[in-house]
Image (tube, rainbow, N blue to C red; front, side, top):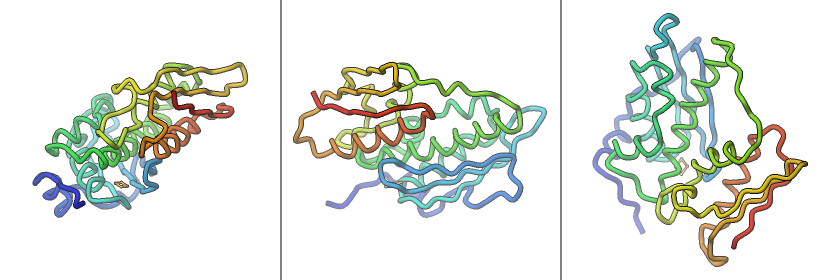
Length: 211
Ligand code: FES
């Protein structure tokens, strides 16, 4: 079945804004989508004094939805101070595009991941900011907030699909998902959760059980 896109998505896909690379950026990040393996790079120039994003560009190796969301989020971030730009969410980006098909919602998460990654690198390398990468229930939940259930295009925390998060003394993690064993998206979800949790430097084994 053909995927239906809104007029706005098609507009941004056909004529994306802010495409390209910035030579000598203040920061950049390339992120990959755990859901599909596609990649997106975001480049930033930030005004030192005001912390305003004065230039932003992207290069996408993703699909039409990813190009459209990268186009819209770079528009949204341009001219904002970095504190504000990092609050932009995948949901806001998708809403600005008039919505995305549920199965394509994860493409907007990739766009936001790359934007936030570039801002984080700016804060780390130019402002000397330190980030807490400790493993706990909240930090895991934050990662799971970005895992989309492709059937409805909503994250698994909002859908209350996550029934239990357990961490033992060796940092092994158990996630219990309230999902039918026959669910067509179960393997995608397991794969995406594993990839996201593996971003924690000190994580042990990850077990995902369907309950
Ligand atoms: Fe990979 Fe859209 S970014 S399917």
